[in-house]
Length: 395
Image 1: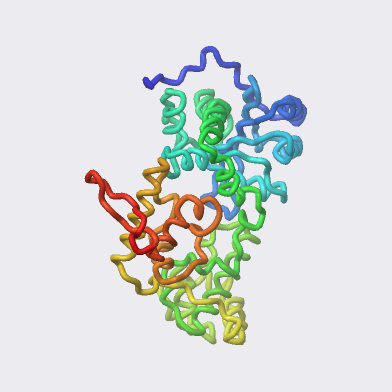
Image 2 (image 1 turned 90 degrees about the vertical axis):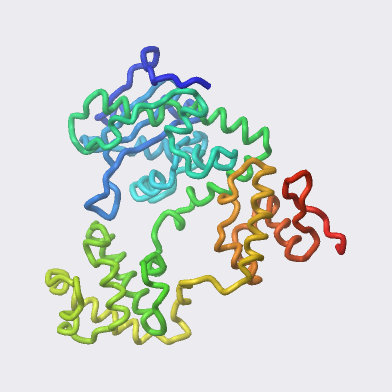
């Protein structure tokens, strides 16, 4: 398909909405349509929660840019996003879903994520919106305004048009992807993959599990593990309360140092490199109390240590399992990385089976093949200079 520069000469005029009356009028219009395209622009450099700066919507032949910074009641928008009869179409929807959940307290639903759908159809993992627009419509999008300050007012018309491009093509892309999913019988795959987007518990951080994402946590042992968990949970809740980036409350390296050294007095924190005096004055006593509480937790209640390295397994076996995955991926025109991670293959080789590839559509597509290979029921063979799976002569 030849590339065509984006041209909006024949498109309807984009409406700038900064009043509740106009927003309600558009949302009433949108509710009469089966789908509405949705995108957002936001900032979160100085806050824990994303600051919503712009909401772009398309329903039928109407496209609007909603200004959440104006004196406007966004409830009509929230009602639309929770309308079960209107499918919300987005690209890379997770952050948008998180933003709206924080505002609405209830997940946006139902949704169709074009990035997820594209991955399931072999377009590649986590493909960009611009790539997918060009692939499906032949239109090459302008990337000129990608670093705009979305909080600034007024926004130039060119900047608004750039933002509207993020919903302009979504209805057409949805139609194409939906048709391909139906043709290949993969619609149920999409439903499985998108389940987390409408599950509130999966869209918010669990403070008690946040420690697992900190660099260096995998090297902690014994009491240091539970101290890291409790200090990180405290930091997460403090960042939420003050709406600050976590690093502005306490840096990751300080969390690890606190877990290792487990200070009992404020003066012991003075020896910790990089722990600035302001943070110590503001949070020192609370952190000491948090550490004391963590050290009083019974060992049987400690979190399981984060694995820094996978259990030792036969590397050759893992390579063979990966070959099985690649063969199944090639046969079904899908990325092997979408099917399973190398880490999960190592767990499978170590006889662990609580992994994604052994559940849902992945089990049907490749999981059963992996289990059959491990059981010796199928083997890797060669035919016509190509690798393939063959029934074992001993099966």
